Length: 70
Image (cartoon, rainbow, N blue to C red; front, side):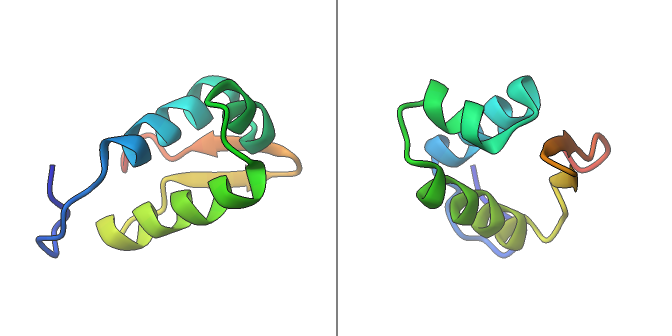
């Protein structure tokens, strides 16, 4: 898959955003995928930047996917 800018989007990034949508928590999503949470959050942010849309909105410790963008 390619972003609007034409760069390649890694499958791992798409899997990560799906895990956030399922768990609504970065730490739980990272644990499920056996990835450290400190490396997980920046990857999601990079995907948002590559796509040019906000994918995750924080509400306290809970995360919500922005449905229209996703």
